[in-house]
Image (cartoon, rainbow, N blue to C red; front, top):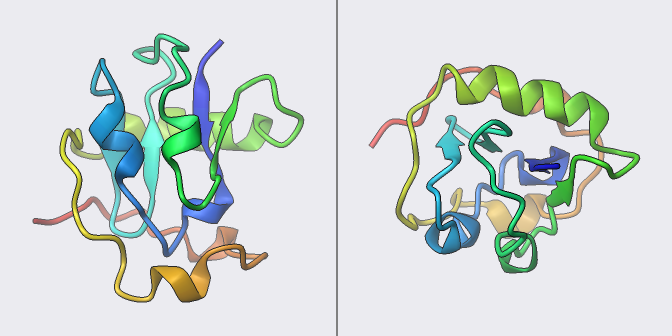
Length: 110
């Protein structure tokens, strides 16, 4: 089992989870984070750290489509190993529904 990042991370991109990950399995896009399920050790320390509650186990009923997205983008985006500022309007987007179409395929840029 692994953990996956789901829709609520889109346009929030809080990185509290990245800071606690012992295996550095987070990858960053322009407005979203993903977990590489092949690198995740299922420790679960990231899940309670996410202010958006966007991280779930891949066994969760809502995780199937997001597992595919996490796998795809973990192979394309740069590894994220440190906490950075969230998106400027993250608090406004937290818990809004229907953000899946807003996921940018572009990688994170420093």
